[in-house]
Length: 360
Image (cartoon, rainbow, N blue to C red; front, side, top):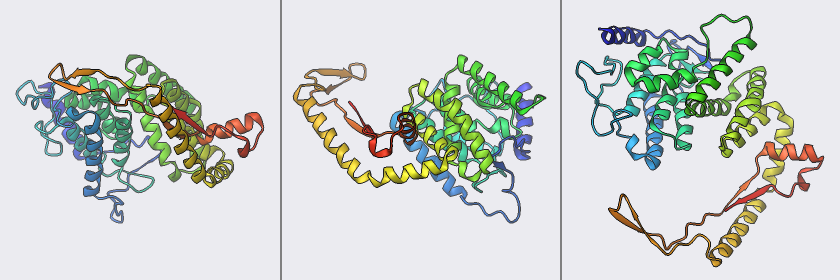
């Protein structure tokens, strides 16, 4: 009876979405007569298919999984099923990721971002970053659903009924506090940080989804007002970039810092971008030469080779490992890293001699 009532309640909520609109980047204009979608349904589905292709490269089982715990068959549709069945959402015979996408797309219908794109492009973008991190199926589902509770009439109870307690807890951890009275925006933000830290202590995936959420918002920050840009960039530089650094996600830390640099110090950013691009061809050639030298010398020293044959797949197959396992890469320092070194040492860009780094 409880499940039936919850399903009816959620069906009603989804059919008549009322945005809570706590997101600065959220506008509810998609249902207006003069609104022309920048991305149509087919294009959105293509973006989702690209996401699925990326996930399949590192976690093929996630593509056809019907639940988090059982990937071998569709979940039960009997009396004890916990799958919400309405005309607006996917039947339980559809894999979990597809159901999450369908559910989020329906919940966010009528909402768009400041860019004019349908709001569902944001959850898709966050899920894409989660796939770049090669995270698990619950993290991907959470990324697709992470704003449904905060910005639509969907509740955590609805998420729990449709996707289970684990996903509900993750979505709750990512959701901002927004329905309690606070005396100031600073008090509200402090409570959001407290909630994030407590959720992170229970499950590190919460902060990983939160980092992906912030990374995608930073990628689309150009549509916000200059005041909002500076405020969000400063918060990102002070909190989220250091978090990414402490978690060892270097590429994400660098991206967050460089995007913050762009909005906090726009003139210095543009000047440094021009200086770095002016040497790009020369730098790429240098990277190529040094990578080849390092690779050749490591191979000559016998590093990265193995003469054994290992059993794989539980002993059902074998793999000849008498091949190189050596990878040498070159990368350019982040713009913010270069800038802080120039400021710290009081030097010009031409005097920075470690713009390129190498990893073995």
